[in-house]
Image 1: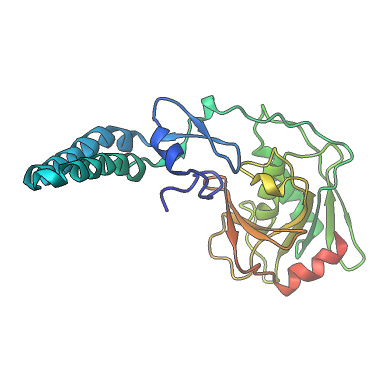
Image 2: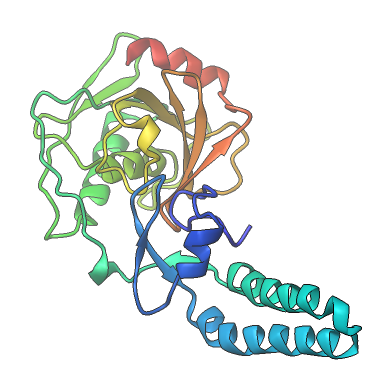
Amino acid sequence: MWKQCPHCREYSFGKFELMLLSYFSTQQCKNCGKLVRNDGLRQFLLFPATMGAAGVGYLIVSVLPEWLVPIGLVMMVGFMLATSIIVPKPVKAEYREINTIAFDPDPGNDKVIVVKGWSEEKLREILEGFQAQRDSEGPDYEIEFHQLRDGDYRLAFPKDIHPSEFAALVNYLQYPIEVGLPDNAISATGRMTLSATFDGIPKRLIGQKAILYIPEKDEDHDVVYVQTESGLSYSYSFQDCSWRQVEGARLSGQVNRLRANL
């Protein structure tokens, strides 16, 4: 588990990459392109672990008959190399060292969210609260919405919106902090084309259209599920901006109904 990329949760580091992983320099994940380094504690433990492996190898060599000593020496080297693979743990590089991909807003973007269950008054309050939390240094955006014939609301983004903010809004519409949850069911479903500016996105997904939604029987409250046009489903965590492929799509009947209005 600890050999996964901390950004995309893929096993993208082979034995050679793990041997070269260092706290003092960064490596790029082959799957998502994000930068990682070796965990500081693991870097500290690497030298004593390697020396310990060498000591064990030396003890083995010292009790072997002379004709088996060459084999024992090979074993000792193998122990030392094994520690340089087992001990390292990829962790995220500090933010200041990550070359953030520039977000170029697209006025012709296809990002849309359909939400069910909120009144217009409550929806405006929720959207105002979400926008108030926006990073002042981040890209500006506008949210336009209109009511559909069945009482649902359709949200569009004429100035575009960062993919991570878009995903966060899908989650926020389900779990807003401004208002208490009503007695009726709430559901929000988004649609977008996945791009490289989405934090930690697996490269193979870039360019695919996808829907974003809260999974059925959600107990985490800090994830959205993403289902791509190729049929793959992923969980995206807001806690550590990581992607994890999941077996079950956990699509509720309400989400399936809202997809028709996207």
